[in-house]
Length: 278
Image (cartoon, rainbow, N blue to C red; front, side, top):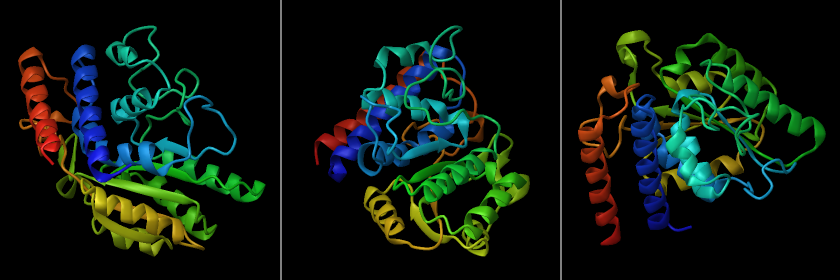
């Protein structure tokens, strides 16, 4: 898929995110929107997955460690054909398929239930080791938040992954700079992020997480790395492409009302129109 197609897919994903959260009247838009480009690239370019056979043994695995940004994952899965897009409008409803955090037992395409921050990278490292032990070729990807990496378990998993030389594991940090209580640097600074992963024997790539050329180059580079896992530190904008949400910590966990929804969709329509002019 070319760069423009990926940009258009990401724009559509952001519309799904905003629409599903508006329908739910609760949820986490800021981090979902910041991660949309990375998630788009994973599902529409990078990963070996098949919506017609969600449990196929040789599929690549994805663990959404920052599970509260499930709307980004759900939107991508719906667009990929794992379930009807109409399900997105039932987000967080009692008895619906799509709950506030990913559920591997209830949602096709979800490889691991998530929600407790810090645990996803441990699971991903275990999956990657399993592939090595069984001689399987699949790769494992996990997406973490920059606030999430304040959790100690993240670094236990990183130590393990580096020690085991899990070169089939790619850890992506969505570095949007904000968490629920404000700037990550003020709450409990995780910086310098790249140096920390390097200390745990990771190959580290730092990119603009909204630049598909940079995203493409990073994942291609990761495929060529041998003998160590890769960490991609992606600098992003919380609330990306929605004017009143961008770089606002208050939109970490709040759904738009009707008026805000209209503004957000108008913003995303403008982005889409600009892409059509390319």
